[in-house]
Length: 152
Image (cartoon, rainbow, N blue to C red; front, side, top):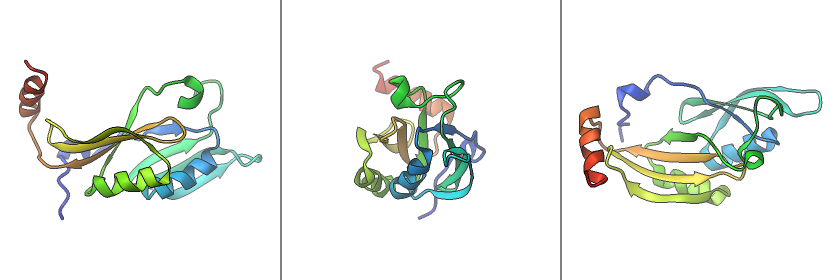
């Protein structure tokens, strides 16, 4: 099946997430999302200063929080960002993530913007949005459908 990824998603901003126990999280993300570790720079105590993962061809950076500038969602009590994974089969990815230990946040839903979407929270507090693109819509069509979906 060919991937229907809109051109606007081909260039990326690379997320850098923080997990207290990043080495364990690297293993978890391999089980949950098929992540492959590209490289790792570890501190003498084994904590990760910097690691890069590949998930569905996109790079995600991960490390242990430094306690000054960066924290992790469990310590903060919330997350301020969702991490989106574009997949050709998000139903299979959802099943894999749940089997690995993610908790469901949003069931599989056909979204007005042309994607099938589900959301999970990983054990570290990060929210992952799992998307399979079904239509490549113009921004105007997404706005029209969005207004209609919100009753406007």
